[in-house]
Image (cartoon, rainbow, N blue to C red; front, side):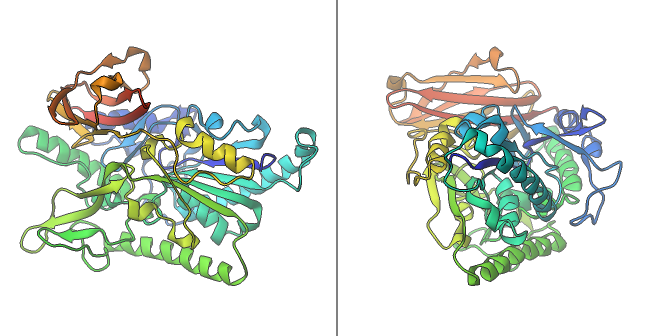
Length: 459
């Protein structure tokens, strides 16, 4: 309702991490683009941390929300949250709580931190709400809005940390309810596709650095897929990670994921026996973009990973993972936006205006109207052209505009020329310096937009 406290939980990468006033993730991430072997040392965690807080020097301070695009190569990206308060329906500053946290840590631990923060902020807001909403029908509760893996934190807080009675509504935005194929690839040391020659050595070095770092991050193990996400090359069906080992993927990480998912399931069952769920759930997702939905194992014994099997999703989370089966209801709201864009005003605002007025959101939300950017690879090496594809009907007659800019330098955006090679299919060949780049395509009649980021690493 309009008088409720609105708490926003960002996803992985969505909070800036500091030590002694310095944004250490930003510094580490830039070094990663230069293929430095020690790039992630400053943001590493010790082995076996589990659900504990790290001690110095591994502990980092959570700052504000990310404001510009960032990514972990081969895993996921975040375009930042520069307009998130507007996207949430413009709550008053006093009733808007952006919950920053150390996204490296376990979802259980962060859920406990969220519990403490919500209790404190809700007490404060209940003491102030009468000034702003004198005719409120009841005491304020919480509208919890969670982007990406923040939804794993939010749902765990509600069902496992006694947060159910505080909440009016949970809204998840592209949450991998059942995990990500990309997390398994990252922990197996093959997040970034390799190639023959020197550039293949770059990919191998980058994969080694990423795997060594990610193996000690509880949050990454919590993202492992809990659906049928492994297929043998030439086969016709998928298997669970527990039924088909993935080369290089530690069994301990799989066991950790299973324990996390089982704990949540048991809590939902237990809470369900005590009565109806006291809060509503709305989950925004998309099926408009090619998305990894299964790892493919090749070789006589399935001893190596090859290209992923693609299916419908939001570009990061496949359809079968974004579905919130734990609610026991059809909680999905389908959009035409990518995962990284789901917390933007065009994707979210109409939903939040309805939720804050106590109205049911629409079942289908306005989206990109059939315009899709597709990168065969979202991490490439500098000094070599890479291909971007654009799919959409009758785009030149819809005032197509395409641009590219380096993250944080939108004022320096430059046009990109796409050439048609098949009906409704266009291609551009680009080359860029090391860094994170954003490509955007816009059309009119009807309006549509797609944005995609690509990471360029040094040779």
